[in-house]
Length: 255
Image (cartoon, rainbow, N blue to C red; front, top):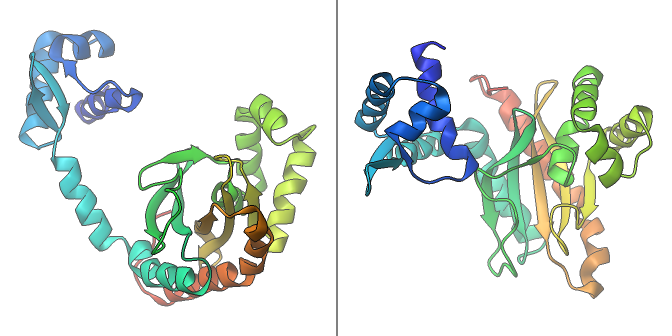
């Protein structure tokens, strides 16, 4: 591995939920000498991406918080979508949450959320949380707009889980389900990500490319569940408005 790859590999160790790593443990895990590992750790500490912890260990540092703020300030999609997300809540359900998600590797990640004035309960999604691409309205509406080749690679990589969770018999049934979502222009799911939560999502595009999804997530009472479907035009309209604004702007939106 090159030096940048090794630095990245050190940071990726924290993805598994272990909050503290020592130089010795990092070296063993990555197959590096203690001297090489120490040099990498020292560089990451100086950059603010690692912080010394009690017991000769290291945790993730405040550098990530700084760059997260920079991303929030400069992300074109978030900047354009935020006021439209707030307007969507005002016109639909103030007890709901509106989330903005984008594809991240083989998952869909929440990059922004706007909660209603009186949210009944927080959504399973929050900024930085990644979900499988085939579960939940937001994931499905993004997946439905991918090329067939990409769609099939997702299916093949998760075939057993997809057949069990989505109750599809084969690749054709899976493709047909998602192409129907694409034709409809929205996805509506009930309790797929978390029990009791209904998600209603529409795709956001720039030009001809779908780059994100906007979802209205609610935990309705039994008497209100049918009302969610009535919000379909609102969610589609919000997604279309964001798409038009992004398409009119000059900067290129990251894929």
